[in-house]
Length: 186
Image (cartoon, rainbow, N blue to C red; front, side, top):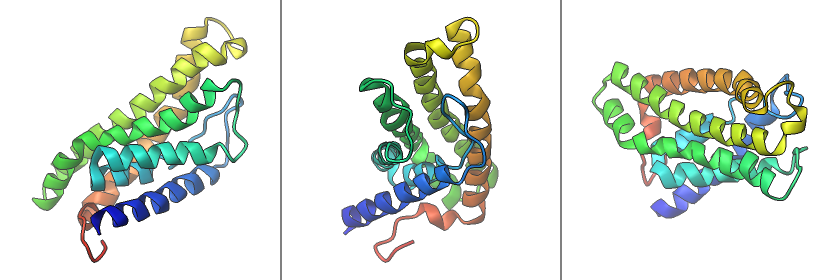
C-alpha cells in the first residue's frame, strides 16, 4: 500500500511541478525561469526520501520536455531537464532530520534543515545548468563562457532557491503533518 501511495504522490507532485513551471511571467532568453517548480520535488523528498524526490524530479524534468524545450543535442536535454530536476530530489538526504524536527516541534531547526536541504537540491540543479551552459550554450556567452554560465544561471536559480526555500519552510513549519506518511493519506 505504501508503494502504491508513493507512486500516486509522485505522479501528482510531478504534475504540480510542471504546472508551477508553466505559471511563470518571465523566461530567460536561453532558458531558465524563476518558479516554484522545485517545491513539489522538495515535498516528495522530505516525505519519501531520496528515491521519492529523485524520481519526482526526473519526472518533472522529463515532462517539461513536452512544453517548448530548448534542445540542442541528444545529451543536453537530459542534463538540463531530467538530470537537473532529478538531483533536486537529493534534498531527501535531509528527510530524516526535517521529519524529526517537525515531529518534535522544533520550528527553528525545521526551518534550518529545510533551507539547507533546499540549498543542496537547488545548488545541484544550478551546477547541472552551469555545465550545460558551458558545454552547449557557449555561443550565446557575452564574454568568458564559464563566468557567463555561472552568472546567467544564477540570475534565475538564486531567486528560485530563495522562493522555494522560504515557501517550503513556511509550509512545513505551519503544516508539519505534510511530512508524515499515513496509509489513510496525509
